[in-house]
Amino acid sequence: MSQSNDKGKSAVPAQKKPAAAPPAPAASQHEQPCPECGEMVRKGLVRCWNCGAFMNATMQARYQEMQSNPAPPIFSQVPDSEVTSVETATEDDFQLGSNTTSTSRQADLRDLEPITSTAAPAPVAPAPAAEPPAGTAHSIATAGDVLFAAAMQEQVENRERRKKRGTPVGGAKTPGGFIIFCPYGCRIEVKEQHRGMQGRCPRCRAPFFVPLDPPDFSSLKQAVAAAAETAATTAVAVGRQWFDDLHVHVVPPEKLKLKADSLLKDFTEQDFAFTSDGFVRISLAKKAGGLFGGGADKKKAETRTAVRVHLQENKPLSAAPGGDSQSYTAEHLQELRVVQPAASRAQSLFHGIPVFGAGRIAVMLPLGDDGVPNYVSLGITQFRKLADFLRQVPGLEDFGAGCGIPATDEFDIVGKCHYQSTPVKSLKNLEFYQADPTVQVIVAGWKCDKCPVVMSEEGRARAKFGGKDGKGIAKTKCPKCNQKFGNHPLYVLKDAGGATPSKPEEPQAESPAPAAAAPAATA
Image (cartoon, rainbow, N blue to C red):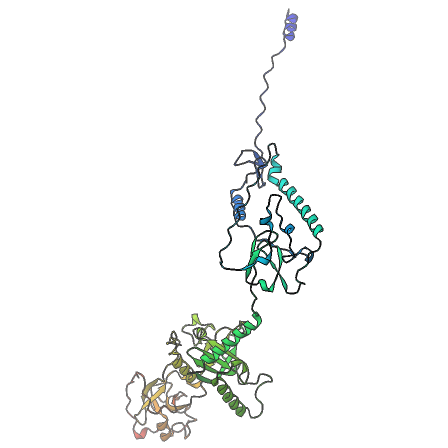
């Protein structure tokens, strides 16, 4: 029984579980849906393969912008054999199609008329695009195969038409003719008598204008340059202020050394003439050959006189005797600025270092065509003369103000003479005067290095303090503190005379020493 039961169980087939449905194909990570039709399109494609829509909105906007602003056409040189002369054009040259009437095809420059209106011709409305026939494939309608075939057919017809009429006569080789182009690039020959007229292109029927005779731009440029130079010369002909032998420094930035006095001796001398309408600078050296030879001073004076007479007669600056010259306009005057000394070290081009020499005043000139900065350095006397003149120019009334340049001679009363009880003055801003070769300063007195004792040069000489000539004053003992007096001279201008000091600070007066306190012998 057990066996039969086992056989019975084995005879009954086992029931199978139904198979699970296959999962829906997931979208590939390399595809994305089209924003228009929803078809899956491979990433990186510009347009959908199904509907042609752009996959990127930014690229679609860029494409529409390019379509609205197409790039201008680039025309290539047309062989002379394909040039159509409007004088020999026939009716076949202007045939546009089988439906074009003869009156619309005829165009010849014989009926050119002078232009009476500058109004642009009304634009011709483009023909509506032909609808693709029913059943046309999508790729053919979008790729433009139909238009390409029509263009090829038209090109074949044009070739056959040219063969029938032969080589046209005309072109640039025709006497009295010259070549122009219509707005659509067709090459046309016209004659001199057609200048200033308008006509229609024999090929595309577009209206065109025959330009007038162009001016001679080379001679025009020369005339403009001569007029500008004459105007610049005339601008400085009246009321000019001359400055002789100013130091002009040409300073390439890559060769600049930020060291005191590095540019002190690197200069050329030039004469400047300033007016309210500009200024000129002229080198009195010869244009060919170095500096003046024998009798330099005499030749220089003769050249300077010749230059000023030349400009006084309003002759061109380029023809002036001497060396190189350059003129500047009123706008260039506004570019002048003081670079040494500067208002503050942070604003200084040279970080406050007196590269042009201590006490020298440097003015930056307008930048020339070569781009190399030029500077002119002046003494205190020359600068005051320039500043006084520039006060007449609007915008330059305070030229150099705030840079620490003394506008007038200023003095301090240091004290009273130890021997004569007379006030002893001292010139302020001494370095500006010592750096000016046209200014002469003299010793007005002396001051002790250890105490407030001062003495005038006249009192020192009478007391023979430091010797008859004062050479031993540094080692002579002070009559008050009995220490070495030191070498501390006080200067005044030689021609100052009785100049009034500006706001002097009167120190406490000292009683003169008794006669017994005569200066001791030189140590």
